[in-house]
Amino acid sequence: MASFSLGMGPVTWVVTSEIFPLSVRSKGVALSMAANRLTSGTVAMTFLSISGAIGVGGAFFTFACVSVGHFVFTFFLLPETRGKSLEEIEAALGDGGGGAGQAYQRVSADQHVPREVEPYRTA
Image (cartoon, rainbow, N blue to C red; front, side, top):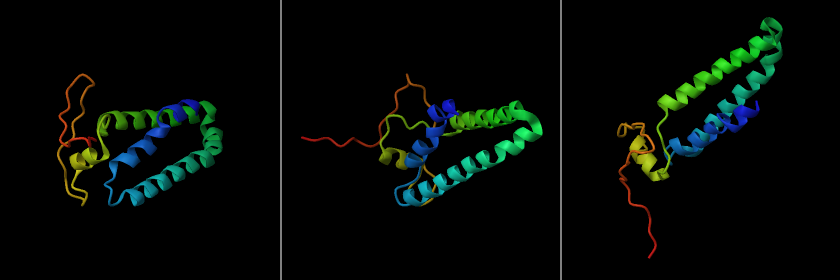
């Protein structure tokens, strides 16, 4: 539980705050957090039943497999948003109206990422 809270747990909060267009961000985050809480509640409510049926080790193994699946999904399918503003992310993922945006590609830390939107500069 401690490693989940320090690792994959916060990913949901960060991704949902960045990935939804501004026009639907509040509703998208609310729906995502409701699903997050529902999933957490399901895990808490079913742990004793699962551990009674397949043992404590089996229950932890099952939850570990789900966590590995979550990590694989996050690593390979979610776009990299490091160093990008919310406006840049929205422009790259879509037009904010449900349309398809430019393809998002995973980049390594040593690759140069062209900036499409000039950052706000003060005089």
